[in-house]
Image (tube, rainbow, N blue to C red; front, side, top):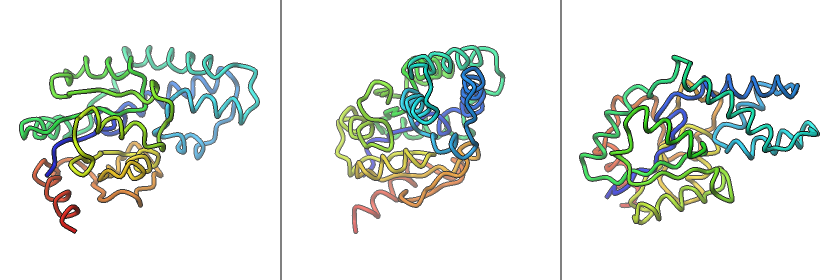
Amino acid sequence: MLKAVLFDMDGVIVDTEPLHHKAYHAMFKEVDIPVSKEQYQAYTGQSTINICKDLCEKFSLSEAPETLMALKRKHFKTLFTTDDELKLITGVEKLIVDFYENDTTLILASSASMATINAVFDRFDLNKYFKGKLSGADLEASKPHPEIFEKAAETAQTPKQNCIVIEDSTNGVKAAHAAGIYCVGYNSLNSKNQDYRLANTVIENFHNFSFHHANKLLKNLNDL
């Protein structure tokens, strides 16, 4: 039976991708690096520091990864308070409430910084629904490593076979698969060119997804 849902945040709960895109590309311009569209998309789901480490290595930058991270976060912080594109993903608040009202433990497992997570949760009043929040920036390994979902299941105090992950990125899906947790791939319009082949099921929107639907999917798998 479904006991816990481990949510990604960017692209699953909140549509931050337009803001991240603008913030990253403003940073790319500042340090004068030509990051291709394909390379940017490949970073989806990874933590900012790991992305910046890779950029420093790929482009042989003299700046430290922490410098790039600070530049990106500076731009994102400004956009967070000034850009009107920031909004919850359609249907996700209703889904969160449905899980919560069916006594499902909710854990946030995101590659975003805890500062960004807290800002989003405060802005959209989500803290009351979630038992815990984990930031990949505080962990040793980044998605696609399974650490964040393993720790999220521990935080939920729930066996993995009673958990599901909801993810929209290739790296997130790989992390859930490596952790051995049922993964619902959310084929978001905002996370383009992502690979959902390792997801247990893929959905296009949240309108027809619910606790009872998720519980049935998990039960069918566990009955095999």
